[in-house]
Image (cartoon, rainbow, N blue to C red):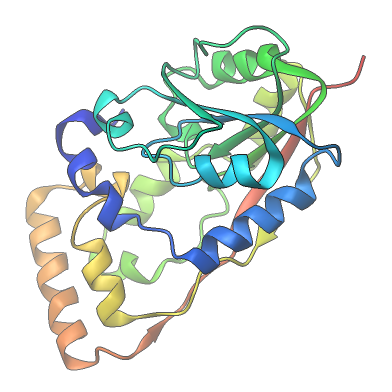
Amino acid sequence: MVDYDTRLHQVYAQGRALPADSLNTWMQAAAGFAPPTRPLTVLDLGCGIGRFTPALADTFGGPVYGVEPSARMLEQATAHPDVTYLEGSAEAIPLPDTSCDLVWLFLTIHHWSDPLQGLREVYRVLRPGGSVILRTQFGDRMPDLYWYRYFPSARRVDAQMYLPFDEVRALATRAGLQAEEEPHWVDVTEPRTQRATYERLKLRAFSTFEHIAEDELDRGFAQFERDADADPDREVPTFPAGVLLLRRPSS
């Protein structure tokens, strides 16, 4: 488990900033994945500082609830007239039964202490026919991220942090949700140079770095900085984002 109330809340906004083009692409994808009716009541579970929460309100036209366990992250959350932020966890969502049409889960399920209970709670708050947009990595389908070369244990850390694809589907089924057979792949990552990648990652706003020894981090970032200085404009490879769609059956 990662405690966002100690260090990560201080660097998250800068280290995980989302360009406007990427946010728009995500909202277009979300609109295509979601039920077609409008407005929709949306739960942004694990909303953090509200990177997506106001945009979800604008996209779907209804009330949005941002639920987040970290009080320090919520202190920075972006205000919006149709957004209500609540402190709470996936395992005990502070919303009534069948109160939401759509649940947005963006890189959050790997932080849950009990994924099955969290998915059961998602099922509980969804209306029959409601949908879940689950953006996550899958431990058995990890991309070969460029920066793994600098931190030898990072690939293993991430593979252990994220559940395998079939396990995610099995947990969803046990929770009463219907899962699609395969993930969708959304191309939302803008081209990024080696220098920009280094400047972003050196803030250590990714939870992966919380599980890597300090001496490995020091060596990795020192080499990364040298490479960024030597070839700052080199474009690093990017990968599409995996999304698994879930649904609460209508009956």
